[in-house]
Length: 332
Image (cartoon, rainbow, N blue to C red; front, side, top):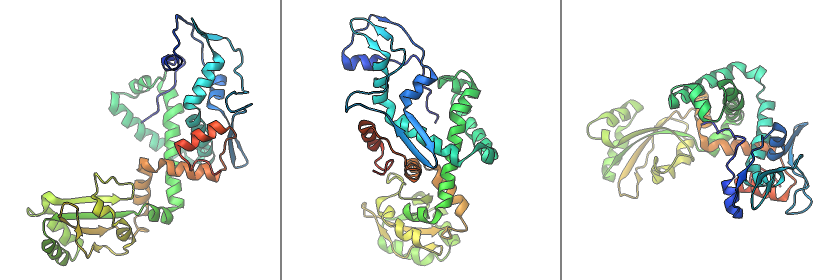
């Protein structure tokens, strides 16, 4: 889902509550792109090296100053633009820095001119999804804080589409290694009450056609599942722990067929597993798409590219905050 656009009239109540500030009168100021750029933090893309940085004079005080430092909220206590800047930096600076650096990498590796048709296709798909939420793209864009659908497309939909394309590129370029890392396997399973019954099923499941016939039969239909593609990211609420524990074995199988051992579950029931689509080269397009569609792989892909392009920050507080989001975003 698209990230809601930050508006210029950001609610300062949280800031006031933290500092126990009672505000009598409020004067709004417009957040310009220049000020927003300062808040996001400077990110530079130079010769395949990404560097994000904030200049500091010590551990607590920022040397960077907001120009035209006039008061924006007045009352018993005054909040200045500088304080507001530091507040936003402390609350969202780390994620904004990562996002901005990663977007620079995306634009470098997925240039619009080269990937226009793929971008257009993904944008249409995403916009169709957004329309289903609120009836129209315009309504959804408005709810996200955008004044027009065009602005929403440029600021959110297109960048998201390019991000998806970079994920697909990553899994295509590193296909075999990622299949091994996530233990990719396609499985079907039938659960039975007795081990002896499971052994009989294993012996009779001489082909996928035979196994499918058992899955559709009245005897086993209610306890049969085609899980399709499963990985280490598959939740145990979906895939039983005992089955998931065997993923490495299933992933390494090179020939479709029934797994030769009944798998005992904690519930004292037994599972018979049939593994298919074991020819990963023949199913590469399908598997790449499935891996790219997994939201749980987003941070892994981001970490890879941020490290590859030497992303770092020189402010200790900011670096610590980024490492808290994901320790793999920065090498040192």
